[in-house]
Length: 318
Image 1 (cartoon, helix red, strand yellow):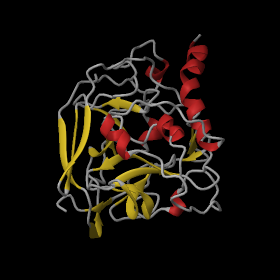
Image 2 (cartoon, rainbow, N blue to C red):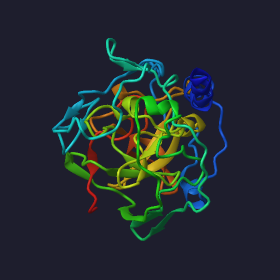
Image 3 (tube, rainbow, N blue to C red):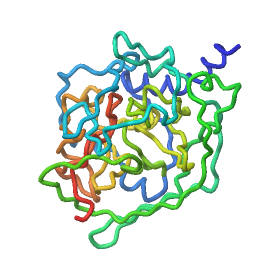
Image 4 (cartoon, one colour):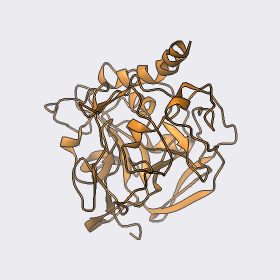
């Protein structure tokens, strides 16, 4: 019975992940009006090399140990480099993790059960002068969440017994419309590093023990879960959002230094890989930004660690 439940849980997430690597099917989304304006696809706005081999979603390189105190490709430049083994989170590796090959399978990974809808979700993006104003109560505006705390009958309970609940928050930021790059990138602190256009905040790729959170922690079908302060969050851009981003570039969120987080694809529809990105998991290319197509720096969402942001490229005081 447990195996049957496991297969049903995986179906929607697996379809979304496979869509990333085949002919992409555009899924319907219900962004807020402000997010819709800035999230349009830019057809033929960029030219990305298709030489780099796409990452296999059934054998994603495991990010364990890829924590550094200075910027480095494939790593998280973390302000915290010492972690506790008693920080909570997953207490047992799931069968989707292959420690021998140092990979994990995102298609077969268990997801926390549940389809909880949040009718009071609120997310707003606006601009005023040189600043972008963002506010959210951290509840998803266009998708459901799993049931938290994780129940004892949930297959995820066998690996990660998350005891936390999801609670509405009150977050607001004033970010520069035109971010300024730092001379030297800064490390990321534990906690919030950005917000996605589903209204949910974004954390870096590490769990409380300094491991690859995407691989180890059991998340719901949209890649989210709450931490001890009841803050629901993502560690990566949900697979459904990546699958829906069918154009050459799509804005899917904002980092707290003001830079955009994009999903970019080459002419064949394949996602960018780490080999095409810099130490902060970003690059400069033509994207739709502040209403016009322009060549600007931005972060890129990938399915490989560190998933969204590896270090802070810009100044929050710009």
